[in-house]
Amino acid sequence: MKHLFLIGMLFSGVAVAGSEFDFDYNDKNDMRGAYSMCATTGFTQGDCPKVYQKCWQPPMIYRKKHKTKTYCVDPPKFGVSDSDKDRYLDEGAKRAEKINGE
Image (cartoon, rainbow, N blue to C red; front, side, top):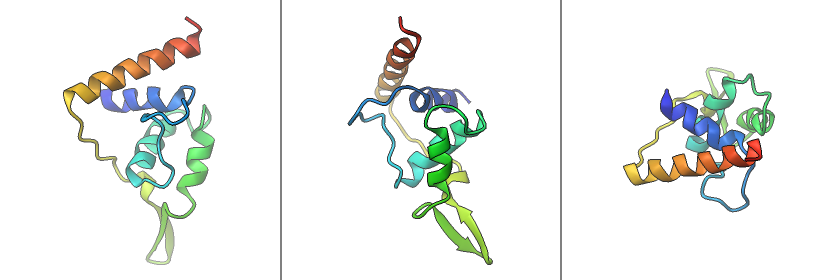
């Protein structure tokens, strides 16, 4: 659950152009993480409405048994080192400070 919270902090903040923390709308794993976090807010905050919209467009959708489904609802698969986790926490803290104006 902590990982989902951290990812949410990363996705809900102001995006920094070209940052490694910006997700790719064409990457299934990035979209799964974004979808999981945005689901907690009902897709109402930040880029969450765009995430929901992109999750139901190609390349995130597929047909199965005559129904349209999305890859976004599958659980994300994150495998990162401890140093990566520390960088993510630092970036999340920086973005939270920027949002709060501190």
